Image (cartoon, rainbow, N blue to C red):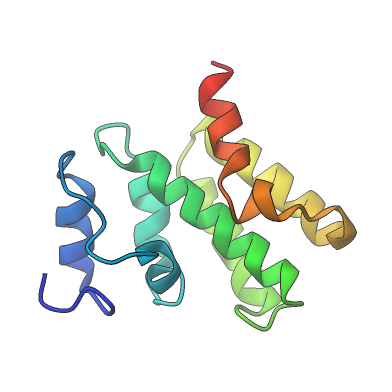
Length: 130
């Protein structure tokens, strides 16, 4: 990877499909969350053949949660709504749950819980309950 802080789309995709690859930087998900690749993150989170699909689903939860937590200073509301709309292209139950939770959070930001949205607890709980 040429630059782990600002990776190219193909570098992210390559990393995502390498089951043995570790994050190239500590808190790499935080760096990724500021890149304009939300469509790629949705695509990777939807792909059952991607060994790190859950990493990207957690990243999507983080992006939405952090936007709400910061009162849309990290990402504006319109960008978040577009992100949620883009998940409709992929008929995955996990996206239906993600969208529903995200829409509820947008309607009731006071329900935000850091561990759920930014710490990955919602994804972890879903994975361990199946």
